[in-house]
Length: 248
Ligand code: UGY
Ligand code: MN
Image (tube, rainbow, N blue to C red; front, side, top):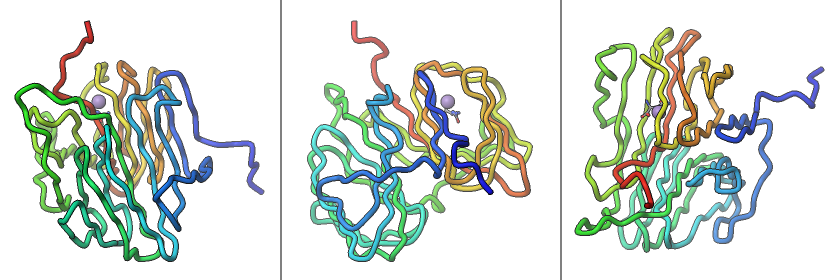
């Protein structure tokens, strides 16, 4: 018998691991007939938000981005998406980036469809335009070796220009592949494991992690990962980028 008092989830001051067993549903106005799990947000100490939405029969997500831009990624299943007047059918591995001040509608869900969202308050840069809506499919993005290591592949899903203040990347590690050094950096991360398993080191503590787990890493949370097991480990992650590093 499983002991229900045990979990791999942890919430610390500068990192968190949220495994599926800790989920409790939230109601979000405009998002109906679906379960919404708010994985990361300001209440945790983060400067962005990450949710996972699972569609039930008759699911519908309708709203308008205000101060925050939202990146929607289809983890499983499919649906129809309309951003302002642009409509597209999205399925597993496809995404849409919705800039600030845009209406969105997601409908016609295959039951069980799962959508990952990342939300960040947009910081406009003087003399740069607000980004355009971006539809995309991860399979069409190149996966170059990361820092010259063929066991690590990094896909960059959003355009690399200063209009964007956030990046969404997919990192694929062959089993045994690992980050080349312990990263210690100002950028914050939220991530979702899409496949496989491995060991994450966060702030000098070691955690076994696997598909379905989410992780929050605050600025300067030290980080290192190695993939283990019989298949590559894959995670999709958020990172804040391209803005002045100090308010003063
Ligand atoms: O982009 C990054 O900082 C990335 N290498 N970090 C990570 O995967 N934990
Ligand atoms: Mn990093």
